Amino acid sequence: MTPSPADDPPVVTTPPQVAHAVIVRRLAETAGKSNRGAPAYTRWVNRPLGRQVAAVAFRWGRTPNQVTIANAAIIFPVLLLLAAVRPTFPWTSVAALLLLCGYVLDSADGQLARLRGGGSKAGEWLDHVVDACKTALVHVVLLVVWFRFYEFDDTAWLLVPIAFTVVHSTYFFALMLADDLRRIARIEGQAAASTHQREATQPEQAPLLRSFLVLPNDWGVLCIALLLLPLQWAFVIIYTTLLAAKTLFVVAGCARWYRELVTL
Image: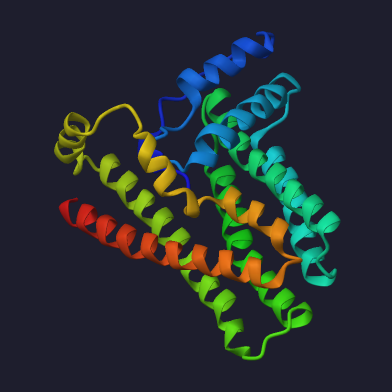
């Protein structure tokens, strides 16, 4: 998942006549999110690609909401088709690529909003609704795929995607709610002292090792794993491993967020 909005830099305003390369550089320097806590794929692949798309969208006069809607127009039909079509390598390769393209758009809309001088509350809400829906839907789709196209001696395996639905949705909600509560606390002026203390103790440079440790938590990794959907047990093992890792992230994340919110 993306880092807290608390790590976002101040918004900037850029005239659309500026060259593409200049816009991309400005996005990287002033309108991107902090990489602290960002998984490796998001940090080094998705966000740089998102900057390119955000720069193009900005020069074409597109809005962040239009980019969000384009993201939804890609990912939701692909996910529904995954539930309807038997997995084959040509199909899952196309599906994984399209979902990764949607992930790039998911990064681009926020960067575009900051580049334009800040997004709207409605736009932020729309972005989170799309993310929340895809977070739950992808695991429901995989449950259908396992039920329709996989052969299990024990139907208890179907509990794996059900559990992943609960864990992934809980993580998303807990993360977003913690972000909002921190934001409210800052607005009320109650978190000023603790914020200054964190800024004094936390390094500005994002740790490289952490980006790799949280890689299983990356939406892009799950999309890439769908390439193996035609190989039943290879995918089951990888998917179950991702569930175990996600569960650890949820437990650790909720404990950390609770301790932080107690101080607010």
